[in-house]
View (tube, rainbow, N blue to C red):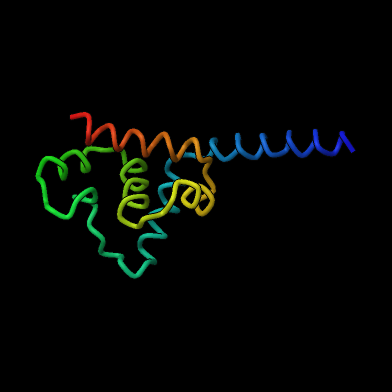
Length: 110
């Protein structure tokens, strides 16, 4: 019985590591396909943080890496949790958190 739990734990760690090995381009393609299929396919990338348009925020969001920007849109504009983003797009929660943290630091830190 103990052996079964050890194997289960090892398998869960292996799956988590393999999710982080998927290329950013593949994760980005999954997210872009989801955004394009949604009813708000014309959702603007800029000014996802607030309703008032701010040119500085637009510029910072435009300069972000594509995957970081896409995760920011999912979490803030689509109101998805980090766990939901990770589960839906087969990424680890740590990876999603890292990109979301980079996005927030890029906007708030400047």
